[in-house]
Image 1 (cartoon, rainbow, N blue to C red):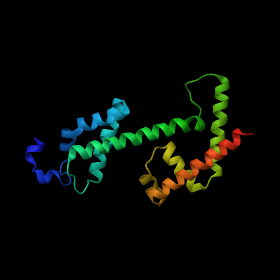
Image 2 (spheres, one colour; image 1 turned 30 degrees about the vertical axis):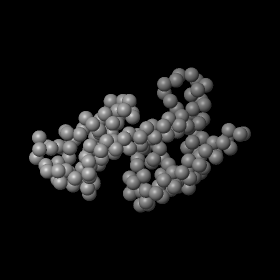
Image 3 (tube, helix red, strand yellow; image 1 turned 45 degrees about the vertical axis):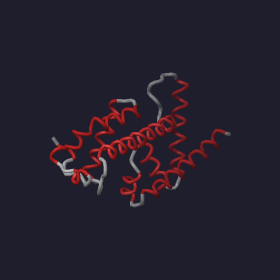
Image 4 (cartoon, one colour; image 1 turned 180 degrees about the vertical axis):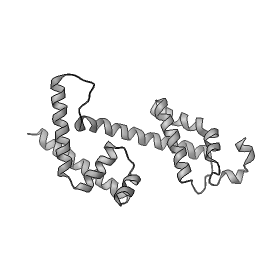
Length: 176
């Protein structure tokens, strides 16, 4: 078994075998994510994402793998909830929802989608790009930063500016 083959010292260093860590701690990671997300599929996604991140960039030193992996799973699950919440707020403005067939609702949603596209076009291009990549494509700030050649912190600033500008434009539109 994995625990028996590694000394206590080796367990505190970067993992040599992420697959063994996944076998040993995968259920613990899954349960931590499931308690937050309440969805088996979403918890499995978090579990997979965590071990993939571990493969891509292992941590330098870990004092407790169960603690590290559980805390990481909780953070990833919370991030996923935040993305879902943002999407639920933005989706009605972006494109019509196909679940409702009422003609009046379709017209309202189509108008809201048109407004959102027009509003995004009026923003600073970098702010709009960061906003769309973050909220509509669900990319992480680090990924967006690499793609656009900016820091993740600056991505967050751009997303915030875009959201603030869109909220102001929406308030202005609703006051008409």
